Image (cartoon, rainbow, N blue to C red; front, side, top):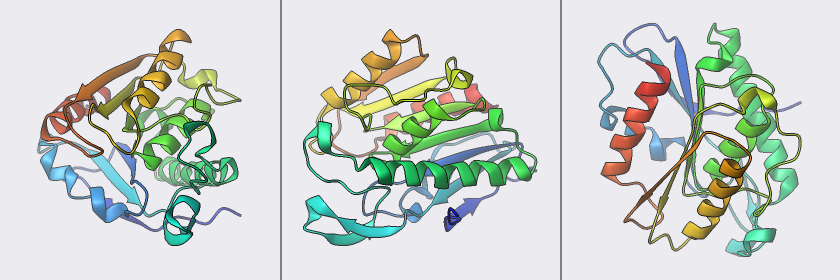
Length: 222
């Protein structure tokens, strides 16, 4: 049985009618991104619940087997063999559980955005493309597809028209911008509504990017 993830939850001032599930990157935790909510400068009366789950702790091969929070093991820096597929599937199942919890609380799946940075972006993109019910949107920051040069297997038609926002830094030294561009190209070629934005930044998040994300979230959920 998939274990429910520990998380930081930030409730809106109004009763929540939508939700953003935001996944952190390798070695981080939900606390790394939770301070972003006020920075997004959303309207005071917005009704978006933000959930920042913590990845489980596990050994990471490319970091000499050091144990840290990780959505999957990274076996190699080679893009084609980077993501441990079993770990990706297990994290997908954990995100499914988070979505199901929100649906049980009255928020329909088409009012839920999956967001993630780096490793978290990989999981958000992979999960969103395969999820059997309509989602509100997918936000994929500084990331790639787990199969590198192919879309995931068992794609769901439910999210063929779901808005996807991909953001990447032109100076990214951890995940090459070409990896993000390849993912975007594959999505666009298959008819997905995938928007690509690049910023003059390393493997991080920039103020200009957060402003764009805020506008996208408001268009998507408000």
